[in-house]
Length: 188
Length: 171
Image 1 (tube, rainbow over the protein chains, first blue to last red):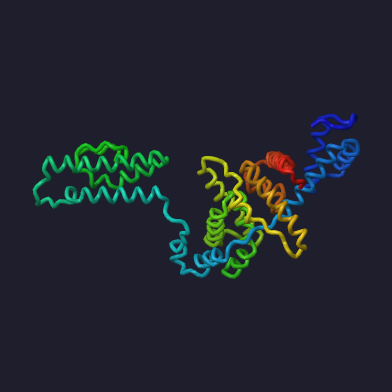
Image 2 (image 1 turned 30 degrees about the horizontal axis):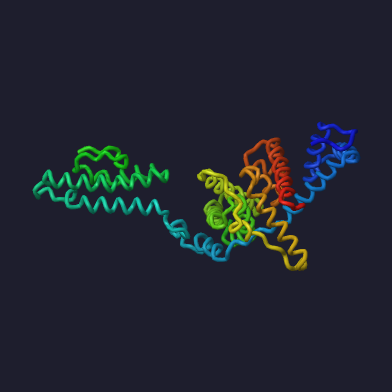
């Protein structure tokens, strides 16, 4: 900043402002104080800067902390000193609902398993599924995975999609040609 | 640290931890989660923390780390949000109605300004100017060299000063 006094230079102002900060923090020594006072005596802009920084620091120091809600404090004690030792971690209160994408992923996985049930869970003693049944199941599964895949990819949750795929992959082994990224390219 | 000592530390530090997290995250609800998590973790690590002062510093460091974990997950810097930030400010009516009003107005302006700073600058300003940490304590908590901490503090103050003046508020 350009000083208003002809006796100061921008370099002096920059050095003086570092000293202003040190003074605001109570970290200025006697020599620095002398230098600063000498500069401020001849530089109105740095005096104004000093005043504004001092007032800012005072205003920040005067900010009150908001109170943690009582229910949160009670929850903390319930998880710690008031909790049975074994359940201190598992009793953590979940104040937020599960994210929508997680619910969507679980719902999709459940739907896929439901679609697979007649095929994948068939007893070995029973007759194997016909070609027509397998083709229909594969078509249904591709449709469900496609929708879920699009949603997860669009929301940047590809990793979740892969996890869902891993979870249902064992059940898909008997179904031909599943090439969704969710399943990691399961083959029969 | 036994249960009684833990309760005492928590009672004394809970608002500080919550306030730090709320201002750092710019989100009151997230800050509640962070504060609870930090306080619970203190109990889990009670054998590693000796003394009230060390416990308070440990709590702030843990809250800081939890906040930055969340900030890293965000794609954009949190913006000033009147709905979440402004309720942090409270004027002390005991100071007198007019003074309390001035404090609230200045406090609201400061909260908006804090929310506009980069997260690390905001953290430095909060630790040093709001919570009164020394340079060394703040540098240790943030893992910064002393010179870097000072430079960040000065930059944050000057940015806050400019933002306040631009908003027509003299600190």
